[in-house]
Amino acid sequence: MRKENQDEKMKGDEKSPIKHQKHLKGGEKTNTEFYIQLVIIGVLAILLVFNIGKLSIKGNVVATGNAVATGIGTVSASDIIPTGVPEVYGKSLGVNYNDVSPNDARLADTTIKKLSQYEDIKLNDAQMTRYINIAGSISCEYCCGADSIIFGNGERACGCAHSYAMRGLGKYLITEYPNMSDDEILSELGKWKVLFFPGIHEQKAQVLESQGIDSKNYINLASNKYRGIEQGKSSGGAMVGGC
Image 1 (cartoon, rainbow, N blue to C red):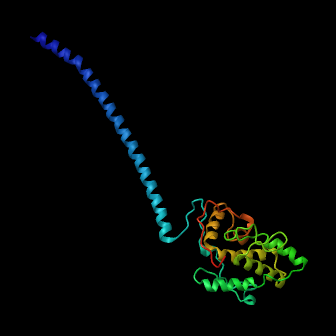
Image 2: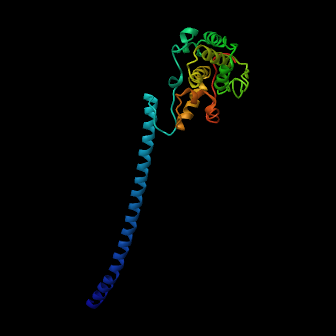
Image 3: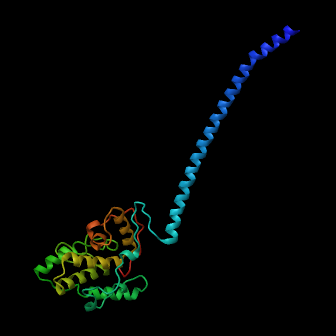
């Protein structure tokens, strides 16, 4: 009996390492699963923090109106719409930038007529050279689609009211304020063009800013210098004044 008991004990001892080995293998499996779970939890935590950050940024823009650097220019209408009386010629012409807005179509049309009344002024050769340089550098593309508001010989190229206003103002400034440079006069024409088409110029300004171009410069914004840069990236906009 003792011998049998000893034999059984020895057999039990021989089996115990196997049981122990199985126990270790089970432990290794459990540890691996544990680490995988930790990795999954970590990834989920990172995604959660990222999404909360995006919501926080959007909330800040909506609540405060602050621009966030996203690589896309952010420009509001107030940044580009000229206001008040033009410093050089406003009083003499009796015009105010504020008079051209979607809020008062009759006043806008009256102001456009004031600017247009000088469109038939006769220019001498030197003045015509300047006029061709200035008026040939801006167009009314959102209305009549001409390459510029004049042809190369100085004759009118577009019959819309906006073009008449820009041509009239150009001639008036050339003849009455000859000390103004061509760029200064072109910039003034650009300001009125922005008033004629405020929505599309606001969108164009955003495209310009996204490419590092100063949209507060009215030659950049409204002349033919960057004409069409907003195509495919804007949804258009209403115009002020008749076409």
